[in-house]
Length: 164
Image 1 (tube, helix red, strand yellow):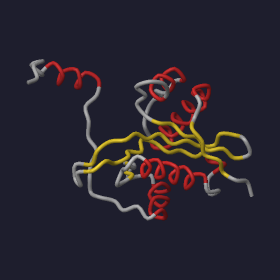
Image 2 (cartoon, one colour; image 1 turned 180 degrees about the horizontal axis):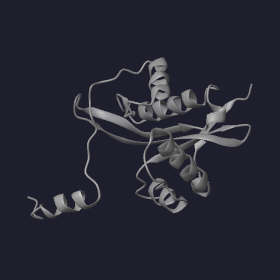
Image 3 (cartoon, helix red, strand yellow; image 1 turned 90 degrees about the vertical axis):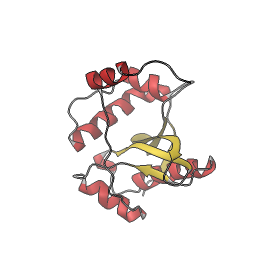
């Protein structure tokens, strides 16, 4: 059996990360394939990166990734790590890749003083829900909401621009 190796992603792996992120969107029913290598490089690497990308390898091939970033949980008034995405290529599932990626994200959360590792999951993604249950994750009745595109710009225009 092959050993899973988790390591920081490199910017020259942006194309495979973009492909896998788009595959995840396809899997959960998100329309469109918005990830490009350029977007992944801009958001995941260098000063001001929006997330930390880790990859998992089996036999030297990248077969999965996790994107996460530190934040704050106001429910408990403490630092928390937010897991944006985790994906394992279908052929590599059931081989400990997902568990290794989650363990690496948890280790980083603990290292920087977070009290939790949190994420959202599509309600229809039964495989992911079962995987998270096996990890010991507990769910809460929370709905993630947001505004995008024109609605985001309209809301921003409502700001008076002044801050005290």
